[in-house]
Amino acid sequence: MRLRLVSWNVHKCVGGLDRRYRPERVIEVLRHHEPDLVLLQECANGSGKRAWDRQVDLLAEGVGLGHHSWFVNHRFRAGGEYGNAVLARWPIDSTENVDLTVAGRKVRSALHARLRIRDVDGHARTVHVFNMHLGLREDTRRRQLQTFLASHPFAGLHTDTPIVVGGDLNDVWGTLGPQTFAPAGFRAMPQRLRTFPAWAPLQALDAVYLRGTVEFERVARSRMRLARTASDHLPLVAELRLLGPAHVTAHPTAAPAPATASALARAPERR
Image (tube, rainbow, N blue to C red; front, side, top):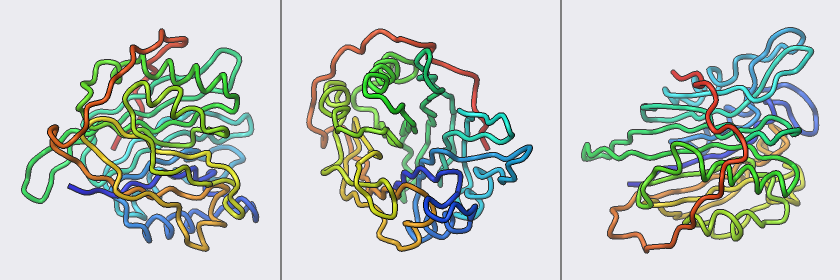
């Protein structure tokens, strides 16, 4: 079974160059790519002086994905907040937020969604999706991923279970793959793709990693002109294929490092 994933830091639907709040641009880009699954970072909810919409609802409706989950990571003193969101074509059986915050640093997390996907023949598969937005410092990112690998529910999942991890990893130097994800049994994208800044991409900050019975068929960054103005990041578009256990090459897994922060936060909103 094949599915299309889009991972995108939408910058609160504010253009990176013109600084205009235009959620319709984000919707048009997402609709163009016809995703089955969307991982959004910096998805906002407005209040006070920040007149943003509740973007998880607005974007899910605009793209036509009927199931979504959202969790706030950051609140502004002047009003408004943003966080991670998962939009899906299939029902979200359960959802929870994994707290990756390192003491003294900005609040960060991974939003977990457990999807129950049915193929054209009616067979159901469970896929675990983790949407994360990591910190700006390399040592912080490494500690955040150590916390993630030791957290519930990830630490209890079988190595054959289909797992998708994606988001804005801020992986400036490309070290997270070989140093952290690969020892835990994850496979990286065929190549790192530059996604930031959107209007002249120089850095590969966004990525998707897979583990278990799911593989990459194709990964690209959006080539739409509108995508270069809709946010300060370009979206990643990944074509994935779910496989039976016999089709996946075995890989070693490393014991996860001890958690360095509280792993589970309160349950995120789900619809």
